Length: 409
Image: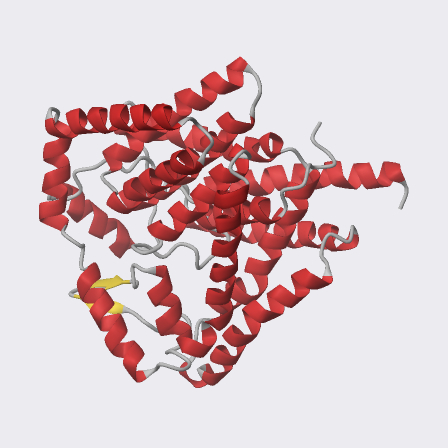
């Protein structure tokens, strides 16, 4: 392939990636009709397959990648076959064994070819637009029409809001936890942008949006996302090469500000009311039920999509990614998944011990650990086309492909 065609293909690939990332985040908002969301999801699937084949054509998928993918998918496939008579969800199966590897490998290709700031641009644009619309909605400056998967979903949230049980902002999403997940993506995306950009305007924009996102994240009262972001920041700060006395002073200052915010404003009252009214939000009961069912299906699980917890008229997921995989796939089915998690932890440990001067690598490592913590209370990494999963895979791609990109202009 000539050098000109090579460059043209890479530049075209970036445009496809830009569209892919932009639509992936914006398609999740609850102010667009469900039919449009499904169309955008289908369109993104096509774009992801296209980028995957570009990466393969340019030899950015090697034998080691194929080996890791096989180790990941074979146990899942065996578990799926064992549960075939119980009709496991084929869409979930394909998302795990086909599209998870596809999205990760195409992101490795993108990370290896382009500067990280350029890669983050469509994500930052999407997050900024979501934040703007969410602020307009939260301040009652504009009334949006919300769409749910069915009428019962809309009725459920209408009942929740009428009883004032959700004492939190939810932006342009029906649920504040969904909004919080987007803000978590935005927080670490702008953190990475601030770390990577070299001009004053970029630094200012990074700080400005980090402040706005931090405030919005606190106002969602989404405890898992707030706690995860805090964990990520602490990991970055503890292991970065900033001088110890500066670390201690900053941690003391932030702790003092947080204490004042909690105890001397209405936020502390709202947060306490949220904890007292919601508690674990049935998570403790759900987890006990998951473990009970797992005891009866240890080796191969109950099949993807076959576990549900029903309370009254409501149906709940496991609210824990690791328990979701365990009950769905069993001990044998999760071998590849947990092996992959161990590899990621070993890579991050290497970064924390030996690559502390690389602040951008440290940001993405901290983001991955924060998302791992977040998934102890939610289930979002089951689908690579969810924003949090997409950013998680992008962070992994950067972690394992930290060479200087060939293109970045």
